[in-house]
Every structure is written in structure tokens, then in C-alpha cells.
Amino acid sequence: MSIEVVPTRAAVGAEIRGVNLAHPLDDATFTDIEDAYNSYGVIFFRCQSITPSQQVAFTRRFGEIELNIFGERWSVPGNPEIVVVSNITEGGRAVGVRRAGENWHSDMCYTARPPRGTMLYAIEVPELHGLTLGDTEFASAQAAWEALPDPLRHRIEGRRAVFDFTGRKRAFPPTQQEIDRNPPVTHPIVRTHPYTGEKCLYIMRDDCTGVEGLEQDEAEALIAALADHIVKPEFVYRHRWRPGDLLMWDNCTVQHRAIQDYDLPQRRLMHRTTMGGTVPV
Ligand code: OGA
Ligand code: MN
Image 1 (cartoon, helix red, strand yellow):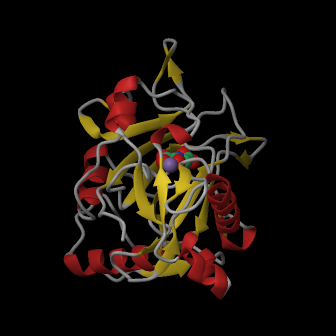
Image 2: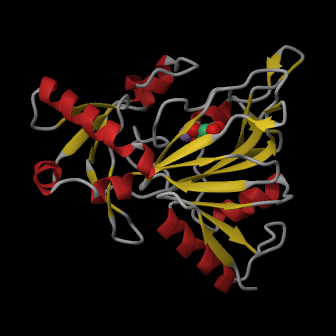
């Protein structure tokens, strides 16, 4: 099977054509997909029809599945690896985690070994007056790094930021046990991608609460400046979902946010899996 890689016109993202994810992939095809994923940061496949088990099997080819805090509350029955992301309620109970990630972020950056990537499979996509709602935006932290002026690059290279689980406001406040399980960690502000060797910025406005070796005021100003720089329009791709899309992003080179512009009766239903990553360097 030979795949077709069609880049978006934005700084990240490519559509992969010619793949049916309901069938097992041979190694050569998988390698082509993985190469596209590593170089484009976001890849997506349209018109898929896959079961939860097929999604889990595809995710596993990229690494061990990472279990997420949301999975303990909202997983697919029989598939604890899949988190349901949805605004739907059934019998008064939410079927999934709602309002996942409305502020720019990279998933689980507050852990010592953040996940390599995250995959969303769109089952229901909200629509009103024939217009699609509930897009997701992706920003290239690699293009953002490449656009930095040299003096700023020199100022931040080798520095580490503090990532604090309690820094981000969440739709569902974490329990004390979750807070205890996630003590603050530090990561390099300039990360090197584990597969491509490319550099990118790794800093987020809410999760980062300080920079080692800098006074708090100076650290906060630097975090804000870099976080705002990453999400400038020229680095952003906005994905308009269609049912049957399977999309995955790289949590090293890409930040993302959900656009919350819909509400019931417009329904959104996604199945989410996460693949284990490496300690940032
Ligand atoms: C996530 C997330 C965005 C969305 O699942 O990690 O941020 O648009 N989702 O659902
Ligand atoms: Mn997210």
C-alpha cells in the first residue's frame, strides 16, 4: 500500500490518504505514516470506520498506551484505554469528559514523562445551520522556535521551566489524590524532538509557574511572551472535524486547544487515546 501525504497550507498538519485503519497495516506503510507524523506534527485520516479495539491497536504501534486521569472516570466500557470526550449526557450523567482543553496546552506536560502524542477519533461532530462547530486548533511550537530572534534563543536555551499540575484551571477540579500524585516537575524550555532531532519551544501559560534561575516576575513575563508567541496565527492550523476523522498530534512540537462554540442539542463525541512518551531533553 502506498500512502499519499497532503500537507495543510498551515505551519502544521497533513492529511494521510489511501489508508484504511480498520485493516492491519504492514510495516512499510506504518513507517511512512510515522515519518509523516514526526515531520508534520499533526496528521489526520478522513472517512474512517474503526472499533475501539482497532483504535487501541493502531495507537499501540506508536508506543505503550498512556492511561489518563480522565480514563478513570470516562472510559469506553471494555476499553479502559479509550477516554470518551463528549458533551452528551445520558440519563442525567455525562458520557464523557466535557470541555477538555479550551486553553492552549500540551497534554500532561505536568508529568515527568509526558505522552508522545494523542489521538482523537471523531464519531459525532456538532453542526448548526450547516456549519461545523467544535474545531480544534494546533500551533507549531517548532515553527515558533525557528522564528525566534537569536538573542532570545540564547537567553532560553538550557533553561528549565517549572510545570505545576495545579497551575491550569480545569473544568473538573482535581482531587487531592491527583494533586499528590502530580508534584511539580521541570522540563527544558527548548526541547529536542526524540525522533527528528528538531528543536521546539515547550512552554505553556497556565501549566508553567516559574523558570529555574529567574526571579518570579521575570519568569512570568518570559513564560507569557513565549506562550503568546507560539500561538500566533501564522503557526496555527485549525481542524474542522468530520465524522470519521482520526487525527493525532505530537505533544512535543504542537500545542492545541478546543474551540468551545457549541452546546446541546449539538452533540460532540470523540474517542481519545494517548501514547506513552520519553523524558523531555
Ligand atoms: C484533548 C483535547 C481537544 C478537543 O483531548 O486532549 O485537548 O477539541 N481535546 O476535543
Ligand atoms: Mn488536550
